[in-house]
Amino acid sequence: MASNDVEKLLRYFNYDLLDKPTIFDGAKSAYMLSGTKLHFGKEMITEEEQAAMEASIHRLNRLEDLDDDFIKITMLLSPEEANQVSQAFNRDFDGNLVAVPSGFGAIDFIQKGMHKAWGLKHLLNHWDLNEANVMAFGDGDNDIELLRKTSHSYAMENASPALLQVADQIAPHHKD
Image (cartoon, rainbow, N blue to C red; front, side):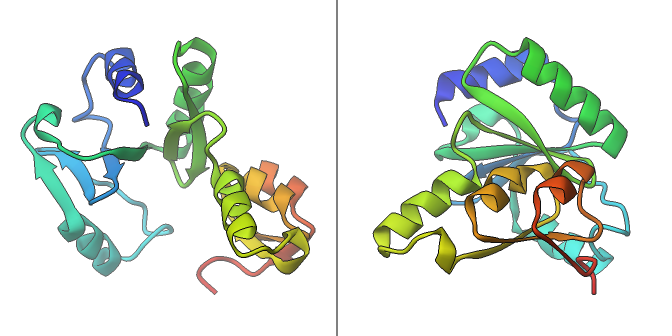
């Protein structure tokens, strides 16, 4: 992810990310600003899973202290706010990033065209396979391109409405 796109994203949100828990996923680790609180609903992960996740995230006093290559940026909001923020960002943002709701109030900010299906295409080419060899499962809008790319696609029964429309089959709830 280009540093100028990250800078544009920060300017778009007026550098105010403490109230919008944001995880910067890098090649080496995941990072958050110190003082940011993670809030997950119990329907998403258990308290133990949240504690383990928080322990794996490096805390920074300033984003300028970060020395890593960004892969994606994830913002955690309420589901309603995530949809509003995603739509506004995709309408108004002037850069090479797109906001994709990934479920339960999370938004993935990724480079345009660098979604899961893009990664799958590279893996299939590397292993000389095709889509007929792949089965994919998803629950959020960030899985839409992936499910469209595979011959055997499954949406979890608690998936987003958009993903349920794309999938060939429905799989049990992600907690089952």
